[in-house]
Length: 278
Image (tube, rainbow, N blue to C red; front, side, top):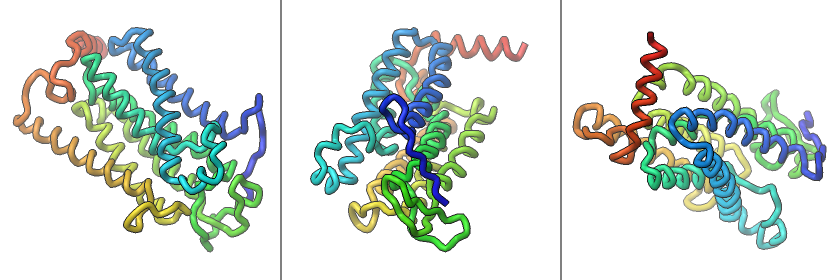
């Protein structure tokens, strides 16, 4: 099986257009949510521009750490549009946007929930690009009947290997569906972020066991180390939320991550719920 497509549109390979599609779908879904929550058009536009810049820097930075030996031999490719790691994109965008929400005195956990809500869908669309272009995200050799060969890929192999992009899609799509259920609408701010971090960390750590990635330290890859950090962050956030639920952390900022938040946001959300229920 050879799922490799060499198509160039306006000078860009097809997989780049698929990544642009994933980013566009993600932006199109999150933009209206932030507008409904009291953000201005200018603020949302600034957020999107900042997120793109953070994604480019974070993706390249983490790709450089993971593949420094490759970029030493090919320094010109540091400026290429490709070569971005999702973990770098996610980490930089999440941290950067969290700082923005703090500076704007917004409810950090609530809005980070929104950012990660559509992340599984974006990952799934992006993995289609990884799969059809065979950019090296496939796994180790396998004798399983669904093993794939990538004879003409950017990183070709004629040995059947695990189609790990498909494995990730089989986890991320159900996760997206679950996070979109009404159950999460009734949970405190921060639980969507927590569940995403925990599920993604476990899924990606397991996937790395059957992928051709360089070991960074102590027998684990860069992605696996990041997954450990994600899981620790998920446990820390969950612990904080559970303590607040039992009454050990009350106050105006409970569940927001800021301690202040914007009162207009809360009033707007409450009003909408009342209208919806009437």
